[in-house]
Image (cartoon, rainbow, N blue to C red):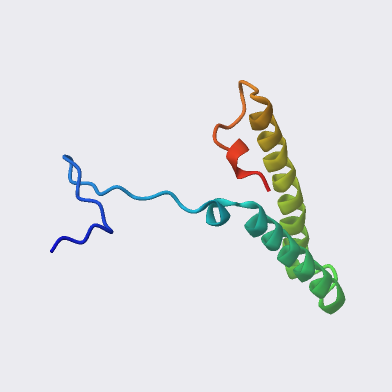
Amino acid sequence: MVDDSESAPTAFGHRHVPALPPRLAEPTPVVLAGTVLWCAGAVVFAVMAPGGIQFWTSAVGCGLGVVGYGVFRWQRSASRRGARGAWKGLSGLDG
């Protein structure tokens, strides 16, 4: 008996890979969680080792997370508007 849960290989020998469910393809929770963890690390190291390399690494990680998330939201907004230079496929990931 053939198991129909997996698709058969194509002519080129590759199987079809189904798309991720939208909740797993949504990058916002991961980006925000990472940024919050960097910021928490900066706070912890500001108390434990102020001015040390751990503090500055965490502070820069927090700052880059905030800037990166801002760029991500800006690109998503441009994609929703249909701007020519925007990344394609972001408008379906509305959070």
